[in-house]
Amino acid sequence: MKLILSDRPLQLDLNDQQEIRFIDLSTLKITNCVGCFGCWTKTPGKCVIRDDAPHVYPLIAQSDAVLYISRIRYGGYDTIMKTMLERAIPIQQAFIRIVDSETHHVQRKVAPKNAVILAYGADSKEEQNLFRQLVARNARNMNFEHFQVHFCTEDSLEAAVREEVKKWSGS
Image (cartoon, rainbow, N blue to C red; front, side):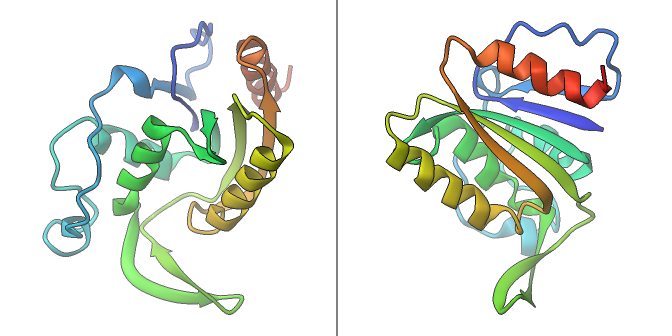
């Protein structure tokens, strides 16, 4: 399965693409993680907060290709995307492993991913570089085998998304 996770509505024609799921986070109710670790101790693999996030993070786990679309704020994901990614912690276990002299969580049935992050709204090269570093640092915990970060303007965003989706279908 392939997943498009966006922080805003997009006009995409995916009717003939059954294996591609599009989720517009701006239409969902996703509250902040409260840090209770209930997803690790009380209900392993399931968040104790009852909102829309438990419908999304299993799709993140199952996807072998992901396209994250987010505005950049201060060198990081904008609020709605950051909140969703933080709420996806149930797809990891509480256990730690050492990989390349770093500690990382053990994944809970998470497919290895090819990821593309389309970022828009970066004000400077410095902010772009900071975001690239953030994605690189998070890549292992997000189970990215390969990832690319592309920057575009808000006006060119939908065309950039269409180009990435076209690559998935090989046309």
